[in-house]
Image (cartoon, rainbow, N blue to C red; front, side):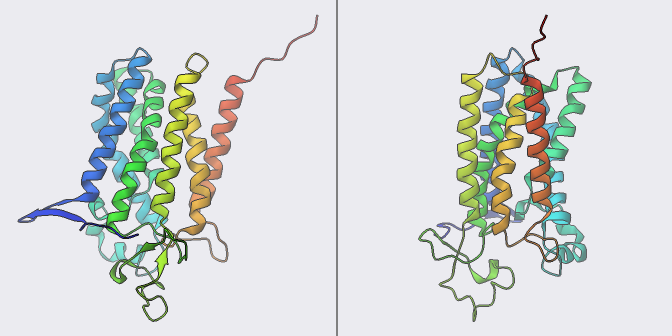
Length: 278
């Protein structure tokens, strides 16, 4: 498996249109369309969602980038040290390197602030975004494929990913030990498939249990499904900082916390009250 195209679609002077940016745009518009249709089914004005999109995206991308730089990236001159030495690179999102957890945290804060200003119930909109988000993630991950990033350790599986030497991180950039023929786990593909399944599952839940769902339930379901897959994929990450002497990183902790809290809240919201004897 190897990217069939250059990361840059075309260049015009200092301007360059990249596949990564184009796929991100397609992902955002696809998710927003799904979300707007969902909120309309809930009796909300879909125009509110399109209005809040701008206010969510900017802090969402900033949060996603800051999380990647300061928490996700490996320690040392190839990771965090590089960004600290070149602070102008920290917010260069178009080069790749964002993390959904940071985006979700900053974006959720922005959504609640926007809803408070507009005097809206934020939960139906949060559900709509949670429904469209895995579709956006599934599409956006193919930008990682074209950029030759988000890969795991070497593998002999037939769907192994070829990574050029200039896109490899240590120790995999040592061609004497890992020649050009080395193939790597395509983590972008694993996560893209997981997100597509998650989108189909959430869409089915939204339709099948529409009358039983409470506002916020789809967002809680997303916070169970996505972290579940991410927890296991993190063991294959090659570009993360892990706690010394362990196979675990910050994402493992956040994933377990998100699943536990979301599962508990979902359970308590739908728990049947105990029958009292008379």
